[in-house]
Length: 328
Image 1 (cartoon, rainbow, N blue to C red):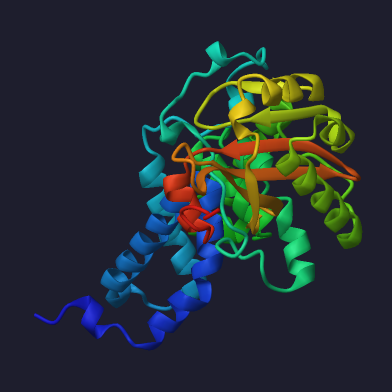
Image 2: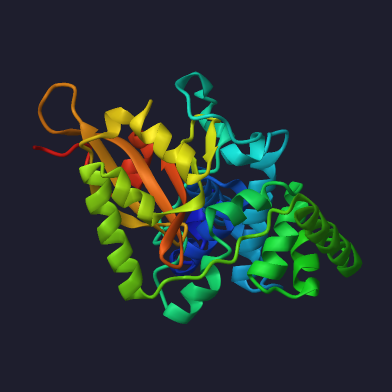
């Protein structure tokens, strides 16, 4: 018997390509992992191929794909703990090595390149979407039960009407509005809304980052003190320890973090709407530099207010197109 995949029209593949980026962004907000988001979209396309003979055109193909993607994400999230950031799991700790406790990869919100989640198109649209893909906001979404999460993303991020969301979720408009109200209350109570920051101009940002790269590569603590906000935070997934305040951050850098001295920073594609660098530490072999972390920096005016060092370079560096090592 001829499969439904074989019977599906060729133009369906074009629709998949047209909507792939936005679906990955949607699934990423739901799942907080770019790798799982790509898997979810692949599964969405497979289910769409297989179910195309049951698609009767009552809804737009885009809405149909979102319905499938939502069901895929809900299936993937069933019975699973939410992904988080270190600051979601407990208070800041002292900058001592004994506080380093690694947790499994599935614990953490992971970074996504802007290009993967559609932040590389029209500048006006990118600006509107950037705040809803920030690491802090994606982590905030994980506080919500999966269906509430889907409702909030569809209604408040993608600006779907409540009636459209109700049709997608096969529920009532009243249920959608109720879920949206509960989702908003949960985020308000947890105080985990995306932060509002003063974005520097392109020229200010370029100057700040040039100074940061020079200071970090020189391991110049005096210069770094002038660039890092006094209330800045630092985290290093997969470790659950996080640091609060410039003094503790710099104490870590000159204490347990001293092996980072002599590192090289390589500009990377932006991550979650934020500046990113690949950090390479001097190799223990004595030749070249080995991958250490993807640094994601949050800027507020002329200061760095948050530094996240993602240490899982085996998966993250290829995702961001970063080389496996640097030669001397």
